[in-house]
Length: 261
Image 1: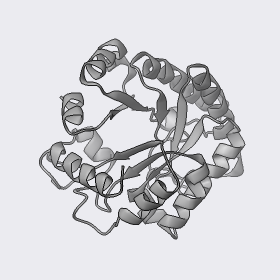
Image 2 (image 1 turned 180 degrees about the vertical axis):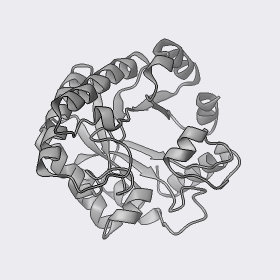
Image 3 (image 1 turned 120 degrees about the vertical axis):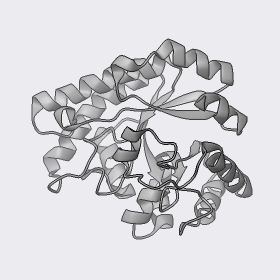
């Protein structure tokens, strides 16, 4: 069980994607997490027919309603945050975004974040690469959207895998995001084991420590050997990069401890 293994490896949170709402049982998840001393971290993905950045008001409204329903489930399972690619549809776009797309996303997310604030919850905007969204690909994009939304409970979620693709400087991107940062995630360039790859996490983690960053720090990795086929397809995780999640958890714990987390 994921919650049990996360706790055994010394982690305090577990990511739970809110994809298929009909299949989610918040009370049961809350019980499992509470039993294992784990707090859920939820994501709320969107598709083309409920893209909250759409200039089509009906499509945008479906996105808002989906997020509001997801917020209730997240609250009921004990989560205090919801994030991911909450600002647009997941997937490669066929064109660049317009200013109207940013405005639509900001207006819709204001409503979601305002409701989240009533429940004491944070909304985090994950900065992802160009193949997963056309709207927020850099820390600067995320900060821009947060300023447009204008609520204090909207934060940046940085992931080193995406930063490695899109940013001119990973340390520079971190500096841009720091005043708004609510979630920092380490993820190797191939999304496999942290010890094998080109990204050096230590300078980034040292900077976080020096800045007295006290928000969530996490790890993400994918392997075709254990990932659900839908997840593997979504992130193009075609290779068996590791055989058990404990391998990633143990390496992450070592990386974090070496940097004082």
